[in-house]
Image 1 (spheres, helix red, strand yellow):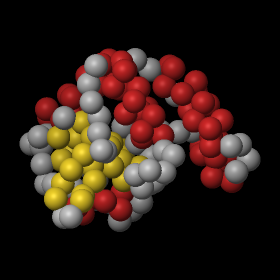
Image 2: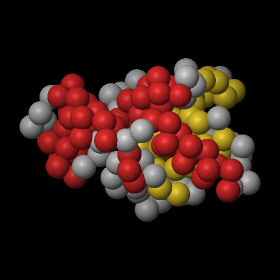
Image 3: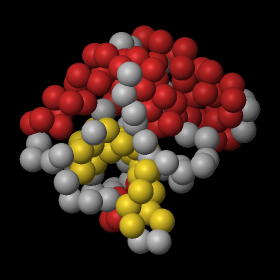
Amino acid sequence: MIYTSYFAFIPKLPADVLKISIALYTPQWARIDGYFTCLNPTEQLLREAKSGAIPIGEAMKKYRSEILSKLSPTKVYEKLIEMLNKSAKQHLALLCYEKPGEVCHRRFVAEWLEIGNSISVPEYVIENEQLSLI
């Protein structure tokens, strides 16, 4: 199964989760297993969004048109499953910086994968120290 999460949550992810960055910049301290760079935002888009030069809603529209529209959700899903199958892990988490509830490109990726592949790509969260999904 594919999930989403964020870098600061990595220590709480189960050991059977393949941790994959889809961020343009991955923190050096983040213990990840790999990268999936075709889902990274562009440097210009990231700079515009973080500086407030464009509203976050506009940034997400640009992300969809500049990145996701050029990719096939089916092929991306197949590549992610291929990465997972080459590992000894049972699940895969797509990672970036923002905490759950904050506007974030990984949730747009999750929705795009869900629609394009008729799957569920939930976010990992812990409630009362038990792993649950939202």
